[in-house]
Length: 151
Image 1 (spheres, one colour):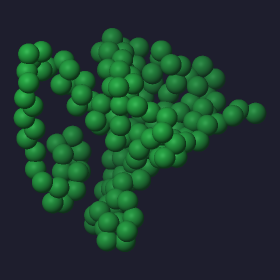
Image 2 (cartoon, one colour; image 1 turned 30 degrees about the vertical axis):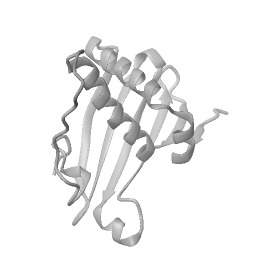
Image 3 (cartoon, rainbow, N blue to C red; image 1 turned 60 degrees about the vertical axis):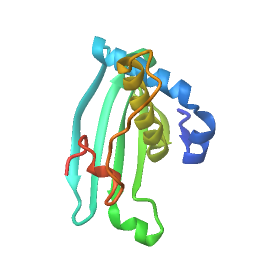
């Protein structure tokens, strides 16, 4: 029987460090650019009111895994004392199809989002720069107002 690793948000936070995640995200972007890694079309659905979900999936050939991430956003959860974002990542062996891991997607997404910004900064910033300007909006509604998330 296949052994499936399950990791909670706290386990992920203890196991990962940002420099390693930044390097892993940079490597994944390189693989996608060179085509051994693929992203498949995203599935997005408004669940009514202040709620939606999306499913993202793909394959990372060098690691022999494919998988999906389902994230659910419920904007009213903050009033209930619950997190607005919840989800799971499911990973499978791309040689056998066997499940490998189930991971807390909320924690993983936070690391990945931060690492993506770091990779972009690393590649685009002037190497002599000493000041960073960050332009954004105050978190009045929620993080999902970002341009990369459909409304």
